Amino acid sequence: MTQHSIHVEQDSAQTQMPIPALEVGRLLISCPDAPGIVAAVAQFLYSQGANILQSDQHSTDNGRGRFYMRVEFQAEELSQRFATLQDTFVPVAQRFDMEWKMTLAGIKKRFAVFVSKEDHCLRELLWAWQTGDLWGQPVMVLSNHPDAKELVEPLGIPFHHIPVTSDTKPEAEDRQLRLLENQVDFLILARYMQIVTPWFLSHYPLQVINIHHSFLPAFIGRNPYARAYDRGVKLIGATAHYVTPQLDEGPIIEQDVHRVDHRYGVEDLKRLGRQIERTVLVRAVRWHLEDRILVHGNKTIVFPS
Image 1 (cartoon, rainbow, N blue to C red):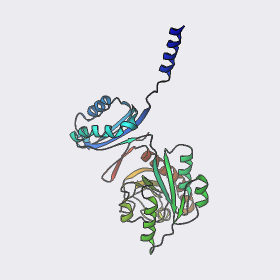
Image 2 (image 1 turned 90 degrees about the horizontal axis):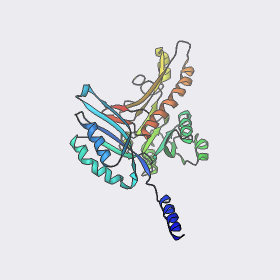
Image 3 (image 1 turned 30 degrees about the vertical axis):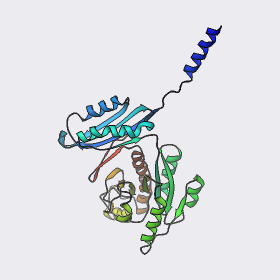
């Protein structure tokens, strides 16, 4: 009877032993192309007890240029040993002269949204976030107009109205940066109809995503639909890109187009364009959140899901 009791307690203890948590990490790599890169990365992850879930790679110039790679991997208690894993990868990175980034998929990236009067892109972003299509955390919405306040605040997201004029832009950007400080990982310009200064962008290099209501590089700047109509275009589109000091010339993340004809007026183009803009922006933001984008020069390599 005693032996039977001891046996039951041992089985109970075994079933209650904690199971190590499996967590997902991501590794992004850009480096000169060379033999052995994929094997070295795979061997490193294997040596760390990690299981590769997905691996994508791309090389330019038929193997004589740059090599790009994105790896999703799974390992036990990854967050607890994440810093050690990064340190251990350094010799591999140095061997191949890599530019690299390692992230934890379970940590949500924090973002702020800038918007003006038109809110269709903001609404699409908030809808995608509410339905779980965007694995991130909106921290705040900033606007040079008060219009979006009633849309944003019921969702528990702080809304900040900061008017901007040509005379007050330096003070407005200073106030914006003070609000953003240590609060966000990247920014989204969701039809924010203001030119962001190089000084502001220097605080978030290649971490500001803009939606331009045109198929860049055509019709850079303001009023692209009116100029597209005047030109008699047969395609209209939208472009999501990283913002750089050069107006509307940053690395392009995503684009889409729709065919039109002579029967479309300016307002028709705007209406159709709004549909394209919001879907293009959400795709670009999702890929950024999921670490699917590598930037090299003024180009992007995107590994879509």
